[in-house]
Image 1 (cartoon, rainbow, N blue to C red):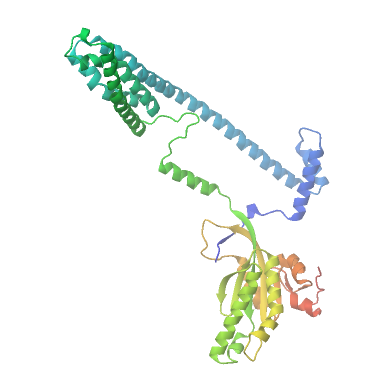
Image 2: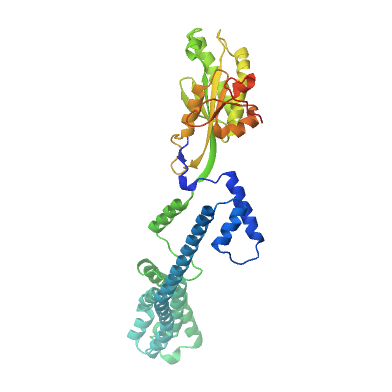
Length: 425
């Protein structure tokens, strides 16, 4: 599966191992210092002791001062925003408290007021049957919270329920209504009144939330709109840092493919080349490789490291003789040439796997084209891994693709064909 690559920017290049060693030594040296602070001159002097130039120390100090300045500005801005938020939230909190207090106090006043008119059937009908629904919705709207609206609605029904028996038994004289009749009427009123009132109270709270939402309390999850959530996701994507990875490429090509294809019948040639392609793919996959591109009789593989790419190249060169013995039905043998290069880059996962773009690919193909039959030519950045996987290497006399290159075949032959001593592990 192809992947997309992006070259590492110059400002984000990694330090070489020697610089890292010096920086580590400087950190250890500073850790042993008993002073709380150090001047720039003292820092430069300590840096020189471990081999770091004053320019490096000055750049590090400037970067550290810039970080501290940014942190101070961020803390100051955060404090100002917090003070502004507290000052703006205080009136809103007070208004919410007064509205909730008024909604809970209304039933305490409405009940006695209704009882004052228990001798008038018209007022009793108004207080006990007509007003509870709109009042419950109003209290729910004032509180803006379903739990408070439910409580206020239940208190309203309980407060006016002692008035309802006089309406229910209005055809009787007050002296004819005993305690049992009073309690039965009150129970009946509460049984149907409380569920109805709490429904209207919740409806009012829902209207308040939809059109005039309250601020989220501490510990509560605020209501986030779809647009806000999308903006948050986009912000997280922009903050996601690319991951530095190192990959290697192996380019393999059959030597003199035209002569091979002309040495037998078309059916036999197609069958043998198909066998070769499957064999090469299996060898690469066995070393962790993945086929990236096919061009003519050349195949390009992607590997997670230089070692795995070089291991696959060596297995192909050492195993092609076995392929010729067991699977090749043509009169001419298969001979291969390989090129290996590596690159440290950023894997752009957001772009998706829709193509390969890396100078390391072109470099691997170029090295393969310059290789002799049965040879593996590798670039300079893979030389250390080449010594571990291939053994001896012989440097080529001229740079290839702007870098030093090394030959495995020349070192295997034990001949100094290029005028340079072979490299040994």
